[in-house]
Length: 57
Image 1: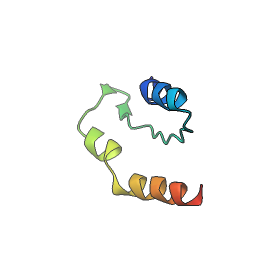
Image 2 (image 1 turned 180 degrees about the vertical axis):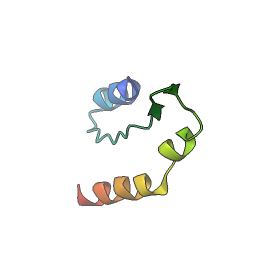
Image 3 (image 1 turned 90 degrees about the vertical axis):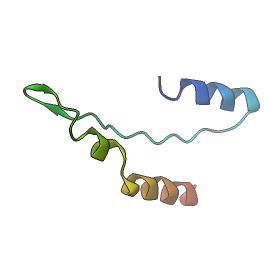
């Protein structure tokens, strides 16, 4: 779902999409905990992995 619109645009223009998805939900036994969600989703390490992947393609 997150990439559906981007894929539609790429398909329309004949571009190849290389997606990079990372699970970022923080779940505990007691339920959904949003306290650590920012740290799970926003990490420069993930950006560096995506950039390294792009350089190798």
